[in-house]
Length: 137
Ligand code: HEM
Image 1 (spheres, rainbow, N blue to C red):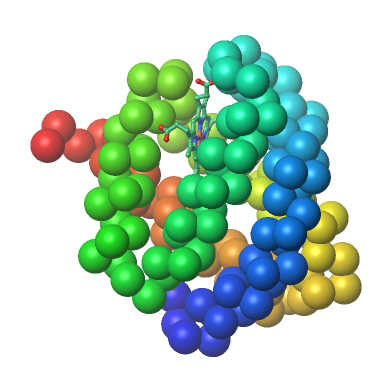
Image 2: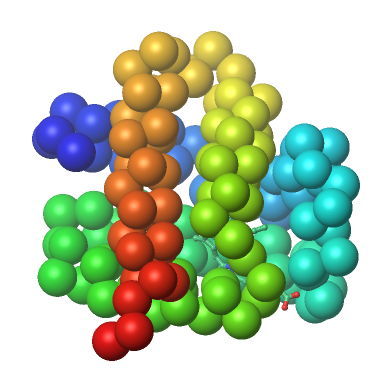
């Protein structure tokens, strides 16, 4: 993640944050369209779950410059996801659903630079979570 990418993430997320509930709804719609089988993994109310997801993305965006804070939080999250029945392959589907959601929410502000920055940040989040999911420590 370079400083330009971090800035692109911060600016674009500021546009999504005010519409977080709608963005969460769009996200689950996209996710379940891409892979209807993941629906059964979600036991909690999707409105509540959507809030937690948006809050966690918010924490991630706010801590991109503080890996010492972000990495341990993502490692814990990755480990908890094993118990939710999440597999490595699911991360690709969730990443695709997230990018679709950003495109829908941002419209013209979803520039190629913004897309590349989110692809990079999601890739980093996913690697930290997956690595922690497989680690015994
Ligand atoms: C950027 C990646 C992800 C983030 C930031 C994220 C965030 C969260 C958060 C904050 C929770 C609340 C519980 C907790 O903190 O442990 C949660 C739960 C959950 N997540 Fe994720 N998640 C991610 C990836 C995924 C993936 C790839 C899947 C696979 C489909 C998934 C499925 C679930 C499920 C099934 C639950 C439990 C819901 C329930 O009990 O109803 N998540 N996630």
